Length: 547
Image (cartoon, rainbow, N blue to C red; front, top):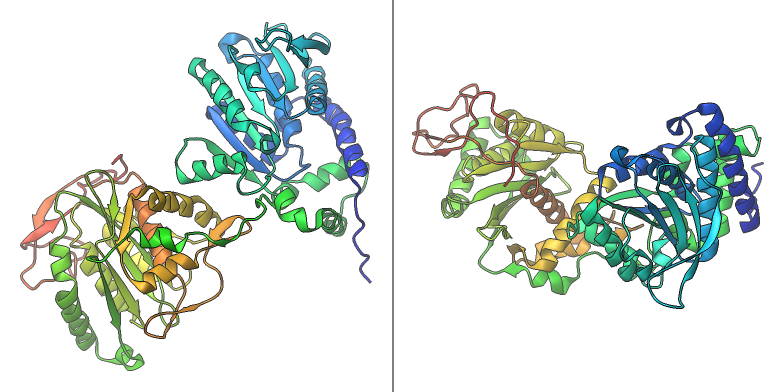
């Protein structure tokens, strides 16, 4: 019989953390290198602060992120100026945090055998008379120092160096602290912001959302409790508490920690701001970005159509394309770049092909949408190629390559090149990285789509689940009474991501065919003569560039 998980007390966990600091000192001395002692996510933080001016880290509680960052502080402030050395300012939301951080820095300094003065407590001059604040400091032979103090924006005024803002969501004036910290970047400083979440409306969560939406250039690192366990957190805890690790013990320990936090586990351990969830894109926002003169073309055939002779299927789809898509494609602005996104469906779901035009002001517009229901693979290829062959200044697309969609994505990459067609394996991580920029484009009015009830329903279906926007495992009814599954929302996210990818057309040649076929069709990939524009890279050219 499986033993019920034991609830871990806060005092017991605090003891484990202190034991970890002491054991970490011994491990660091034995290993001789910080790289040999830090866990993967701790190393990732150090790598990010070395490469990015500002790093945001949303994390689970009690995973030792700050412990690893203390090593970064020592390595930074113990280094000479010509090696990137600078002062470090640690800003916690209370004095106890400051003292604990400086103690950990002292441990690392001793482990690295860095020449450092003893930890000293002093009154930090924040520039306002009679209001100096208590702080802690370690000085190094390099001439630099680590100063740990409680949160106050004035404390950073006139300073220079590396700023670490810990548990940022709990600061009384995070906006003020960030404003003061970012000023240090002008002279080569850097900023690291670390926190667990404290609600969707908290200033820390807004920083994260803005970074994901591209409104600020900050680097995001996300580490949940399960991420930390996968990186070896419990193995390390077992080591420092002198226990024998086993997968069964780790599973039971995980269960006890989750049980300890109860209803708050999502926020405290899994980086999900409380009160989050529900619709990701409000309906009024979507409706405000819909234009009535943009079209949706729908193609559906019976199950028997799949088994008709090839020439009959091809002629039928060619006729449909010419009747519906030819004029909208001819009407596209020949001077503007065009991309597309595609979400695949064969029987139960739809295939949505979503071209996007990049306007002169960089506004993105979806000129039309092609929706295919119950269309054979080969005829889906026929429609896709008909569209892509006629997109002016074609910069490629991103296509759903999950499951059966892999075929269509692969043949498109073979035709247009693997650098222009990205075969995307959709995942929660992909959604997390690519839905926020699309949402920001809706909010900024820089993305316009056709006015259509079914497209509206697809976009409104996107839901925040555990802090990640995604398509839930439910289906909706379209205006024709048939099932939908957010197909347009996924295709639009793929297409919008392509317009942001930096791919551009690099070559031009005018070609056409007399019979209306694609210039690559039945020619082994070589264009043949004709009367329309065809964008094709020169031999050996790279297709990556800036828009």
